[in-house]
Length: 182
Image (cartoon, rainbow, N blue to C red; front, side, top):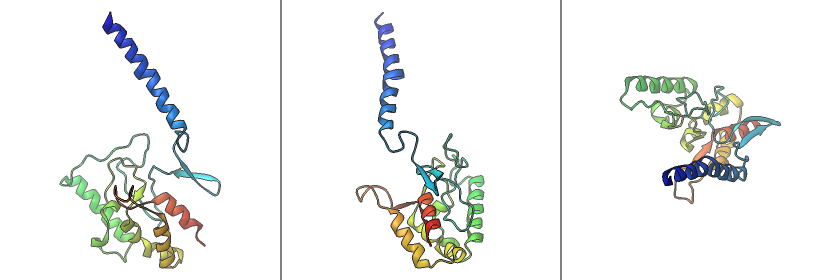
């Protein structure tokens, strides 16, 4: 009898009370637990914490995704750095990047532009990954390099408490600001 009572108490605690507490806390967070959307011209264009694919050369490109940016099922490719299929995929990404960025050498390409993140949904790129794309965007949009570099600096997020994590840039936010440049 004690084990049955304990089981029933744990079912109520873990299946009802705990989820309600978590949902209540989420409702107090930005986005009310539904994620933070980003809008442009009154239209929702994406979520702040979910990466998305930008194919037009006038935009900054984000990290590749092993799950096609599907937020319903995040995950990596689970292929190691010596896997021939993985190496082929990375080589194809490098070749594609070089084709779209002829002013860049292979050695200048930051790894985060040719390797997918563990979740496949990373919305951020490194500062180096943004800077390596400036010439292409400047040429296509007819904007001064300095203006785009200033935009990169203004969107650079510093490490937590100045210690934890690298500097990073949210690609969607950067591209929205890029569209708003005159």
